[in-house]
Length: 326
Image 1 (cartoon, rainbow, N blue to C red):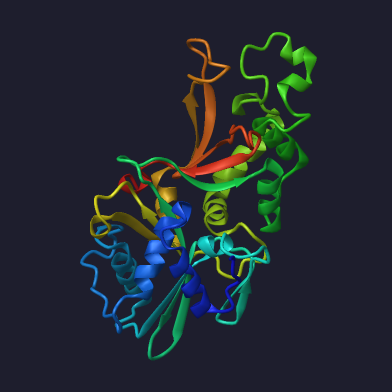
Image 2: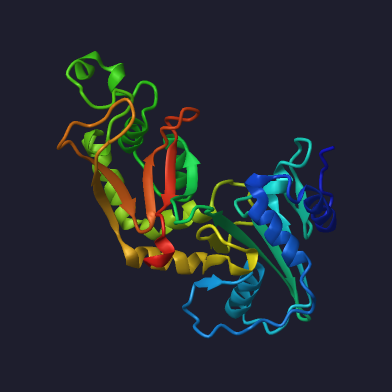
């Protein structure tokens, strides 16, 4: 029977009950289970290189050592870890959890970690990403509609005009903004009639969007990493990324960053730019020599979703293997 977690301890009990039965959240479940069962007190191992972000060992040890290095903690008396993703699928629809007196209904953090020290308790949010292939693949960062994304920007004091909104809706292929909605455009079209490509969208709106991304790259990257819900009390402070398939838990390679570190490294890696590409599969393959432009900024890739369930959604991904490049 589905359960509503009444508090952190009850949440841990629920997690233990679903361990191994939810493959979609298996990594977070394993991580939280191992964090909650570490011998206490925990004395962190000092990182030899403060700028190192890649580790191969048990992820719970890498995470705690990393957090302690950033928070300058010498000892942890107790750890409480909660997987918000698995709890969201383990209750009866009211979808709430009380963590340290704060009710959560939706949360961008996949794991909420509370570290108890002799001086104080520290609660942080962890955004987890994982890849179980032999080589790293793209990791989904944000999935919404064109209007949903622009509303996120507007709610965070970034102005966006109606021209820019219309242009992005063309890019996503919203109904009324598609080539197939305009017979005069469709008659000679050889490319996908379900959406406009970046180079084809409303020029005024396109130029505004490109300027917006170029001038506000750090802030937009932060919003994609941290923001999803207006009522989110635990936005992520860290990103923990399982880079690829591991032979064992103890030999798992993970990359860890604070949000600020990842934003800074992303900006250093690349500014806003347009990457040429061609459609090589599907119903509307490009003819030889035909290319389109894909918007990119830093390690973030932006594209129309195109999935059968949500074809017009706007999707942001983290570039495959970014942790080896930045």
